[in-house]
Length: 337
Ligand code: IMP
Ligand code: MG
Image 1 (cartoon, rainbow, N blue to C red):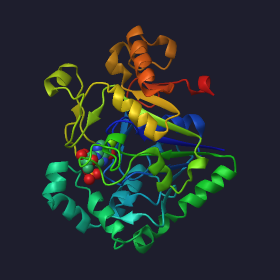
Image 2: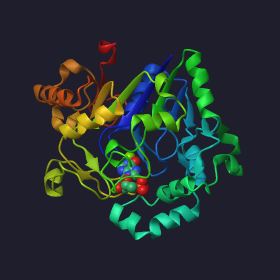
Image 3: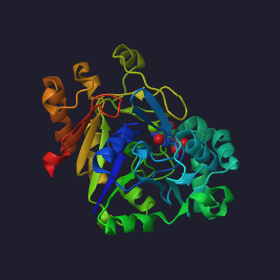
């Protein structure tokens, strides 16, 4: 049996979706289950020329053989889920834990209409903060109370446990990133829940002793959307001149861009219990590395960067993404087993 958690090490949007999709094709899990806050998350996965954005369905959906589950810790917006299931053609493969919290129109109105959340914190306006508040107050509906979700309902922890007992592979995917954890991030400029690996395990009802690997994904040039401190942030003139421009999957806001933050990487790896790290965007460190899938072909500049990053993180870097497409990745995990 093997259960792997994949989480973001910086402020979200590290490219977890792509890393999850790659690992899924390589390791053939029977279940890919997501934790994290809810539809405030946006993952982009590019396969060939096609780009897919997802907010509710696990980003591992591009691997066709796995069941796609949403753990009980996650907030579900039934309409966003239904639209995605139709758009991606994944009906029959998607399962929602019966205890998931539900986002209503009222939660979205309260998120968007609240100046503290929408302006000061820069929330995504997807209703997650107010929905988690109602959940804590024990007045929120659960997935099992929503008739439209009936076809999706499942006991996700039980399905995961059965798969692990059967000797199968399971992937647990996190959303958001370490820096916007309610507990460990840059409070109050954070999301409405912890985002570390322990939380992702809890979101899926998987006890800590059942986790074999925690892969923390770091971006060579971290980004942040919304407000809050960002110690290595560069001016947008500088990042524009470097050809780095990104826009949010959910809100389409322009992302703030920063340089590598070794101190944050180390602290994040510590709290996440990192066993292996993934680095995305190495083609931004040296454009000559774009699309490479063989470690030996990386340039000296890229290898020097990876050495520094590995020393900072304190764990081996076993996955290196060299471009947005699914196959543009170097996977040296086997060398560390
Ligand atoms: P909320 O989670 O919508 O309340 O937003 C709170 C803060 O977290 C804002 O700064 C958002 O931009 C940020 N945030 C929430 N989810 C994500 C995500 O998936 N990626 C990046 N930032 C996020
Ligand atoms: Mg995102």
